[in-house]
Image (cartoon, rainbow, N blue to C red; front, side):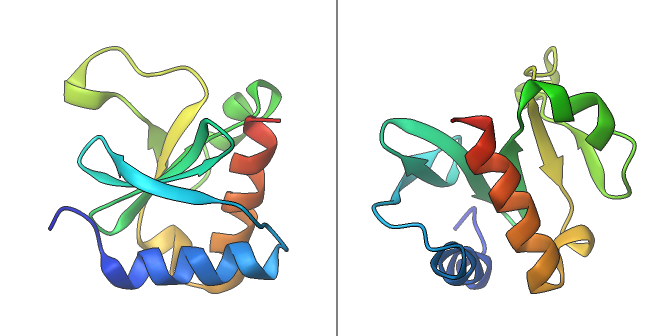
Length: 107
């Protein structure tokens, strides 16, 4: 399995805390993607979280500890997508904050 089932469950709980309904899941990039309508806003890959950020927040978030650009296959980074390390989302409030940013990134 290429995603942490425990992290997927934590994401589900965090989305419920945010009051998000109608979020779907599907396999994306070998991980477990979370979609609102037709747009993916977060992907659990192994024990990390890949999140789509609002363009205005991308540069501000990159220097934060545990954050790096998402560059699949070591290609050019995908603009507005970042990878959040397991350490940076070890606590539920931080995980919830990142998911809220991801939802804003698609709205």
